[in-house]
Length: 400
Image 1 (cartoon, rainbow, N blue to C red):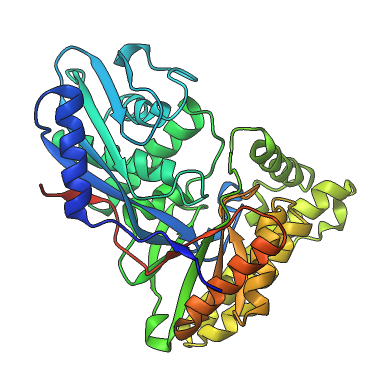
Image 2: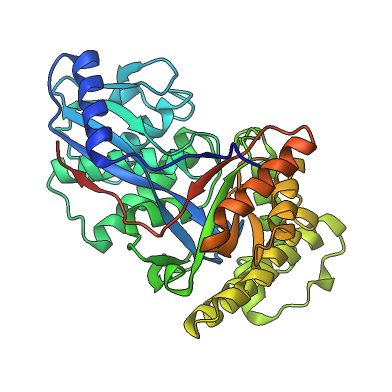
């Protein structure tokens, strides 16, 4: 079987060339600078960040780049070659749902940083042009990459600190932008890893205290690889399903009289107190997923990477059966990867489409990809695409 399509990362030089040309074509002059932020996959710890849980995301080598130039008239202008109309508007008019669409993620960053007092009263707006190699709609945090690239750009142009504490503050602004302006009720894992990742590491994100701790991830040293499978099934977080899951988690915590399900997980709270079967399933996923993150950390610390496989697969089963966020395409590629010899596989991201990951022998990555492609074809599903996923670096300024 041949024909697997690989989505390789684009070099900084190529992205910079494209974004510079796009900026000049749209705005007629050169930008002040360019900043890049990565997409991400989540190794494990899904749908727990808004329950104060633990997650282990990994920054992808695929990046979104923004070219930025400050203005002095209070106007924000956003454009991209990726599709969707350009948006121009006054900074003072940005608010929930305005603008809508892709520009809301950029406008939301400006709004949130302003509300946090990070952009002084004299902030006069900006021109922003976007290029990206992060697949849109694949559940790989293209929106967070967009937000975080602009947040870092505005911070550096404004002379703000961009050490880890400064980046944590920017990540909080990006979460607020996504929740309150783009109206996507996500947690904060994606923004944390986009701004605070470390190459060669996964990032232990503790949403209870906001900490982000790099954890070495040496899959290549063990002859392993993480295969990302983009099912190309439509992935949307604004159609109500994600919000319903989040509300269920919050309702379950309230009925258990705990501040969050992380508290229930840490205390070993008996979930039999949840008489509503749907809430019980949702809570069971969150509590068991937090424990799977801890098990993953233990296995990684002792170098037992191949033993991660069953933990990853158990996460998928929980997401499929208890949290009900999988779909036919995700189940197909997970089952096919396992049948082809993957040690473990699971959906990653918010679900309802998007991507899965598989832990495989590096020497077998092409064979597993071919088997997954054949399974999708045999079921009449959209043909998936595949991405390499070495643990990569966080948002940074890139040079032209």
